[in-house]
Image (cartoon, rainbow, N blue to C red; front, side, top):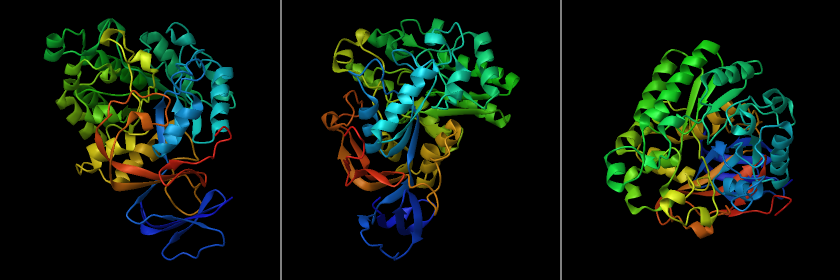
Amino acid sequence: MTAYLITGASIVGEGVADLLIENGAIVAIGNDLARPDGVEIVDGSGKIALPGLVDLHTHLREPGREDAETVLTGTRAAAMGGFTAVFAMANTDPVADTAGVVEQVWRLGREAGYADVYPIGAVTVGRQGTQLAELGAMADSAARVRVFSDDGDCVWDAALMRRALEYVKAFGGVIAQHAQEPRLTQGAQMNEGALSGVLGLTGWPSVAEESIIARDILLNAHVGSKLHICHLSTKGSVEIVRAAKKRGLEVTAEVTPHHLLLTEDLLTSYNPVFKVNPPLRTKADVEAVREGLADGTIDIVATDHAPHPVEDKDCEWSAAAFGMTGLETALSVVQHAMIDTKLMTWADLADRMSYRPAAIGQIGEHGRPLEVGAPANVTLIDPAVERTVVPGESASLSRNTPFAGMKLPGQVVATFLRGTPTVLDGKLTRCGINS
């Protein structure tokens, strides 16, 4: 295995130093390190070295919707975005509700080689919300599933949600809830408010999210299990989670990059690229989720990377699919919304996009500080670069980015997965066996 020496980078937690990678691990950090024979030099001057990013909420679509994304193309996009590990959501076809399907996704990730893939198992059979899936079998499988979600569908039945929390408590699992009360969102198209009335689109009220979060926190307090709130998007949701944490409950939450930056005002264009679940909210909501992420109420940033083929987005609003891509732009959006605004530091970003998501997902190889002896999962970013988002340049199969044409700061220069570069000089390497 080739050795790599990153020179003169600003290493989170260490200051400016060199970082030597050899045999898949970080073997030295310091100034003016000796250069082993054959070492490849990576210029880190002016750049920031972060622990490899971890995404707890990615849609890779395979099996079943390989026209939108595959595990290979999705993990390539992840590598370009600085991610070394992603958690693949269960809304595949067939649904990832059995040991066989989650093992298939896990093996596809291992074959691709661009990022470690950890499948998320469905909570209920077929994500239909009527019967618990094979939670124990998925947990005991080669994929060792620890996070379960019916993402895209809320586990709306309170009794079933209670049973799921009780079941996974036995092996320390986590239920990740898509908080959306279905009766309050039938036919909903956008955030409910004055603008939805003006645009003539059925409103999606904040209370639909907040009521499920409040209910599930009460259930979790009763059971004493682990609850994770997916893509929190409203000011009220932040307040509910903040109160739960003050009580010491095992509740964690995530926010997406797009909910940190974009607002409902963009929908005046009727461009379906901005159609997403949960919907883009108000400026006040954006300010609240930024504050919640900054103070730790919201634990992590998760992309909710949701690729779609062009025909599912290039159509009239009502017929368009919900969802946006996000893996390749997440780090830049967080820099723009949180770092450049002085709401967070780069150390805070490492916490919200690496340490904490790895801890919630219970993966020990990722989310570790950059220190001697740690696996060499490293992301090197140039924060001074400003780039224009061009959908056609994406490593993902899909082009439905809401940031198309927008100038964003930061560029991933290199990504290392256990010492193997998946990205060098801002370009994908041929590290995967299917490259």
